[in-house]
Length: 406
Figure 1 (cartoon, rainbow, N blue to C red):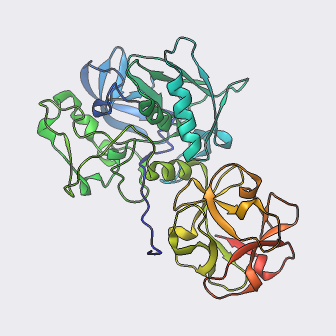
Figure 2 (cartoon, rainbow, N blue to C red):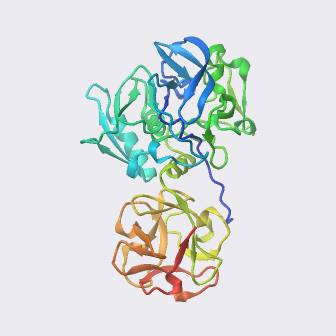
Figure 3 (cartoon, rainbow, N blue to C red):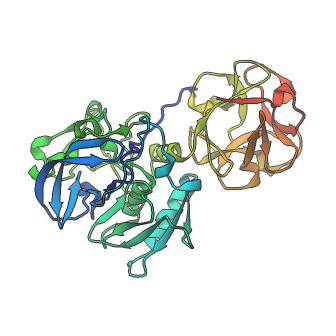
């Protein structure tokens, strides 16, 4: 298998927009709308966006709300401008601390199982965690709504996530993605290299929904290749005026956009918001990195040292829970085989499960296993040859146990 790995990606909201905007989907992901079936007055105006200043945006006025991009609502309340961040940097003020989202399910919400099912799906695919709210000041309230909508990112205080009767488990997964800070896929800046927008087929009042970040004058962040399979992608017939496709793939491929579950690109995108990426070189040689054998994401694939090459098999997400999640597949964690504590036990990647065999402490150049107070990530026999196995061993401060994060 090739050692090169192509990242699927997920378009994300700029941190400066995260607390201002609401996102959502309608009854069908083909026509994502905060107010399904309603059209309003089309308005172009200068709007103050936190961290961006005055921007010219086009939106619809529906039921007293400013609706942009079909399912994005401008918050009518004035909020203080925050200092700008460089594009692509996560502003922790818009992220959920500890990658944990406190929540409340409104007693009036029908079919609350769709919420718990969506939460279980997110937790099975990413390091994000959700907990019933106790006294937390910032939290999400899942409540009934006419359509499906959510704030983009953490706004502070109670923030609502509305679910209409037609919002499925998949729609709920989508809306939670917004609440975590994720944007729609087809809004990314380079989308015209991958899809064609059939403007003549779009409802006249909805044309503004198909603008990219740059066309809106807004800030955005794209990671990796375009992800047709993203749960955050519009469907082919979104806002169609005549039953013909509004979006077509340039590569001639078939389906895109779905509400079944998170794609690999979605999980990588969400993980990128909450878990910094890192690579680890070892002290036995200047150019030897912690590596997944053959770039294979299969459960049980062993780890080794290999010439540092910038591939995904050498990149890890450092979750707040002490996990090292492989960017090959973020639901694969660096794992001690069978949870053994015997010196020389090989280290592999395995489905993330929260066990001690998958938790690590990184300090003073050592990567220590949570299974024991004196078990360190170690290169077998202090060998420097590419392909030398990685194991756990008694911590001894040798070069084989010295790891430099970069």
